[in-house]
Amino acid sequence: MKKKLYYAHSLITYASDKEKNELEVIKKIFPDYEIVNPEKISYTGMNDCLVRVRSCTILVYSEYKQHIGKGVYLEIQEALSAGIPIFYVNNYNISEFGSLQITNQNDWKVKFATTLLGREVQQYDG
Image (cartoon, one colour):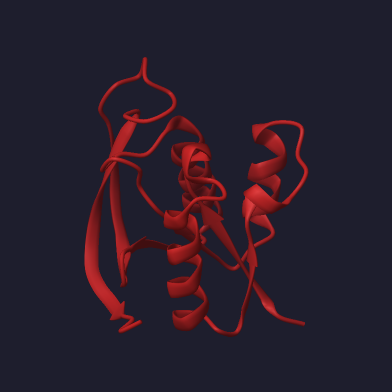
């Protein structure tokens, strides 16, 4: 059975070229993982997503407009509390997660928080 990877990303990017490109990078860098993409699954609320995060071995997230919304923030927090490794995908790079910083508690969709990154792990040359 394949290990599972949770792909945390903004609802705004669901079914977009950005999502398609990020999934391509994730598949190339983590070929042995089944990707759990909330855009492709049925859920009734954020708690369903958090349960799925806990069922995965790693979490890979992306930003939208250099920020994350509250949903991605909560998914990252869930992974942190479960000791699940977290990575960031941007263009053709995968980096280690560093930390979270809330920037605007009133903007749940786009600019709720920012993340600080660790070292770059791998680059995919498309």
